[in-house]
Length: 347
Image (cartoon, rainbow, N blue to C red):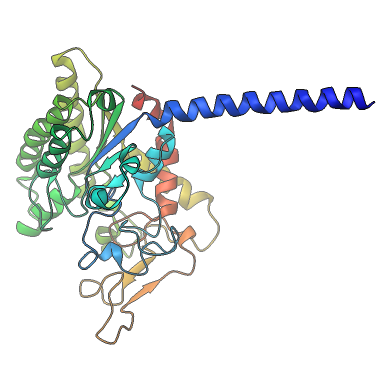
């Protein structure tokens, strides 16, 4: 008996050692992948200055990590889920690159700033062109070399704020929206081709979400319906974006540029969310909103620090966190709807 038990113990030890070795090898292989992120608040993980960014105020981050982290949500955003799928840590935000160890840069970098777009927007923050300038500077400084770039993926999420800016400056005039979409596409093509030129091997660009379903728009129907005119605008944008990416790939018969269909993912996730969650779910209604919409916002406080916003009892029953952004639960649902297409991210 002691003899057989001893051999059994050795056998188990060997098996676990082999499993650990396989896992370690897989981990090392995945750790070579870099994720570079460009865009807006859907992917920003902390680039706004703490002194001015609403994403650094309570109650943002209440679900994860338990305090404000610079994410425009109560918790994780799209970047976090994409990084997890790729088997790496969420890349460091560009703003914090000099305040961390060099080893923290090995997963890539996030250049996205909430509120920004392909073109200049109402947010006085770096637009996509400037974000790529930041990236190019790091490449020129050899922070990321050829081997890093040969094993890299870029995530691009832009355009929602471009349309918000257009509508704000043109008093909701939709007549020339098609011309404006063309202007966005012309610059977006230049931008993502620059990213390719800097050596990134796969570039995933998100199709724009159904803009008419964002709570800021759905409030006009008491959060019961989406604004169809804006959703048609989203569809037109996405048709043009698909064609632009096909043209870019056709230049050298490649598949560098791929899309992540946020439009269908939003609808799919919203449909599942509203039909399969417990009673009390909020639908299109945000979890956190100002007490006087348009005057106060999620995170607003008065001079004494008193809250000028309301927050739902359970963010896990919400799809939207505030009037513009999904909650962590919403992003998880969207990501789940995207999973079937994420194999395209493989280099």
